[in-house]
Image (cartoon, rainbow, N blue to C red; front, side, top):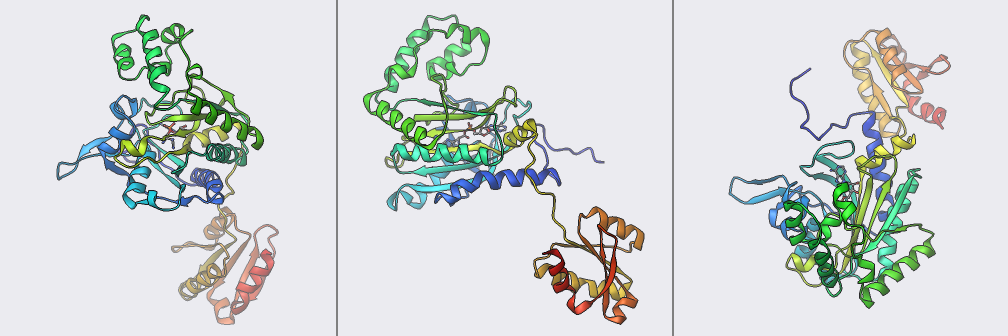
Length: 419
Ligand code: HAM
């Protein structure tokens, strides 16, 4: 034991539980890979400005939750609380906007937010994300939503719902914003909420407190304010989703916690998770490139939460990870056998046979117990006398049967037996 523990709001991933996280990452990334998305990796920290300008100063994420620090040269850096703004920054830096569009990118990685810790809400968590940059085609919105929905279905989840909304664009959102601000001005709100309403009235719709929610009944909703172009876009997205057999719930109160969104926004919620129910979310961010000093680059993407997806799988009792695979466990007895076992193990692994080996001066009994625990199908026991005879004892760990196999033929024989 040690008195040093992982920081609050974080946890370690160790076998066997870590296998589930890996399997979830794989499953969620499978769709984007099949759909032409290429892998992108950006640094875990960025200039703070990337998030201040990209995600928005009025958001909780930027104003309260970032891990911001000065480096030794006095630059303000922040651990990434999300990866969309960094991906757009990286794409602009590389000039991807001048190449073939949309540029389709996917990523997996750690995110850092200084949040109030609770079940499903951590300060370090992992996302699989996909971003398609440089197209305003509503078919792309539908492609991404379908990829997210099928990713979760692929894992065997069934108790999730897709919430869909449109947040309008630079033409219609300001009109809606003004109408909402007028409505909020007539409510009995505390100082802090009033200040937030001043910066971005849409944030107040996201307030979960019952005393605020009660007053919001009758608040103007965005659907009544969408301009012609945004309405047409939203209708087209819904038509495509219908064609794809994706089911969704229209939710005019869905505002999302990041300021860059325009038009299509969505969230996937799972009802086995309690209050932190979003297992994924995303939307269009047609103005983000300009916010970061780039050209017009209409784009859309999502990020799916790996940690919460694992919790959702647990809530549904779905197992996804295959147990760690070990086909063969080698037990060398004696110094000469230990030396020969080094190349035997290497040859088995080179042949693609998952092999583990007993280390240290363990007796036969202890080594055979480890062989049983390894989950392997065969133990190969090599004593100094076997070595002189050019054989190894091959024990079937299920039936207990044992036979001597020539050492120079053991890889082929094991391969045949495992087929
Ligand atoms: P987000 O909704 O902030 O969006 O996060 C996406 C997902 O990450 C959430 O639905 C949730 O599953 C997971 N998540 C967020 N915060 C936590 C936390 N504290 N603990 C555990 N899991 C968490 C974004 O990050 C956007 N960048 C998504 C996006 C991509 N929009 C466009 N492109």
